Image 1 (spheres, rainbow, N blue to C red):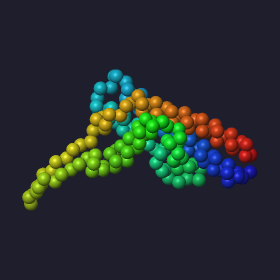
Image 2: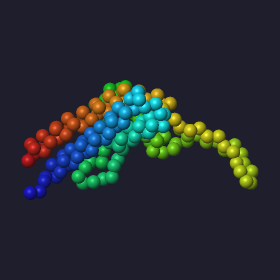
Image 3: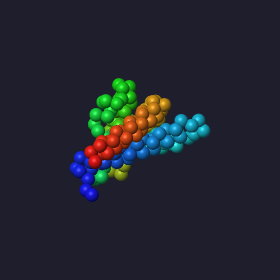
Image 4: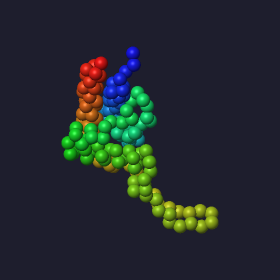
Length: 166
C-alpha cells in the first residue's frame, strides 16, 4: 500500500524530529560530563564543550537531503519555542560552531604577518580558547533539554496527523 504524499512528508518530519532529539540528547550527555567536578583537565573540558556544540547545532544546519527525512528543524522553532535569552544563547552557540569550531574565521583566530626574509618570516597569532567564551553550561544544558522535549512532543503531534490522514 503506497503512502499519500502528505503522509510521506509527515513521516519525513517525524524522522527529523527523532534525529534532532538524538542530537540534543548527545549534547546533553556531553554537557553533563562537562559539569562533573571530577574533570579538571582543560583539554577534556574543551573537547566536551566542542562536542556538545557540534551535536546541538546539527539540527539547525542543513543535512544532506533525503526523501525519508527533512534536512533540518523548521526555521521558526527558535522564534516560536524559545524566549529571548534562550534565542541569544542559541545564536551564540550556532555562531561559535560556524565561525570558530567548524571553520576558522579570522575574527576568532587573527594572524598578523610581521615581516620576512628569504629564509623565514615572523607572525603573531591568537589561538581561540572555547572555554573563555563564557557559555553558561547550565543554561546550555536546559536549552538542549527543552529542544529535546520539543522534538519528542512534535513526534507525537506529527504521528497523530499521519494516523488521522490514513
